[in-house]
Length: 151
Image (cartoon, rainbow, N blue to C red; front, side):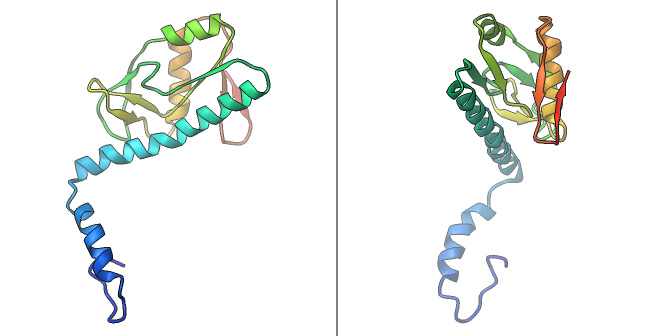
């Protein structure tokens, strides 16, 4: 149903049209930026919940978004490429004995906008983090795909 589709007995149509009309006028570039922010929230929810579960079991944990660990990307929405990672905060937490949980699939561009890496982005994040860290510590990637894939 489009906002123009109305039935004669549809009393809610004028209200629906008033609410949706401003959204129709949003430029696609703005919609893409906002959609990326929305998509990143799933990863953020997951890292928080996993860190809370670890803490509940007595395992010190710290969760990070891509921006918090400075996963810098280009500005391509939904297909961004990682340009740099600052592993300082992660190293500090690992040295302190914490399990570090980093949101995959996301980073930030030079302007601080959330970006997403697109399909396979969480795997890409795990590999890029391992390469950036080079600490000799084991990286264990947990995935919602069947099984665990230790790297």
